[in-house]
Length: 152
Image (cartoon, rainbow, N blue to C red; front, side, top):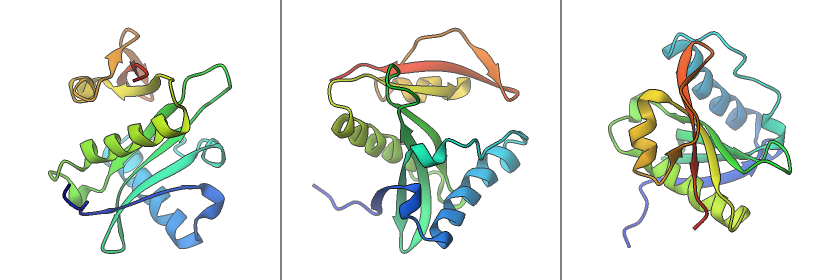
C-alpha cells in the first residue's frame, strides 16, 4: 500500500490549538461563505459536538470535514466537507470522504452514514456508495439532496 501524501487528524474541537482551530474554521468560511457566495451561519453551534477530520500536508491544512450524530435516534453524519482551493484537482475530496467513511464505520459500526449533499455533487457521492433519500431542496440558497450510505 502506498503511503498517504497527507496526515489524517481526527479530534474534538477542544483538542485543537487556537491556531489550528482558526485555520479549519477559516477554510470552511472561505469555501462555504466567501467562494460559494452564501451568507449563512457557518459557525452553527454544533462544532463542539463533532469530531473534526483534517488532512494535513507539510504542516498545512488541505481538507476537512466533521463527523457527528445530531441525536441518538439519528444516523451518524459527515458534513462541512471542504478542500482548500489551492489543493483542488488532486482527488482530495475523494480521499477526505474515504477517510471520513472509514472513521464513521469504526465509530458507529453497523450503521448507515448520512450526508446533506449539494445537488451538483450527487454523482460524486454516488461513487462512494451514497444514494439519494430525499427530493432536491434548497438550503441557504443552494440546491441539496439528502443521501445515505448503507452500513457495510
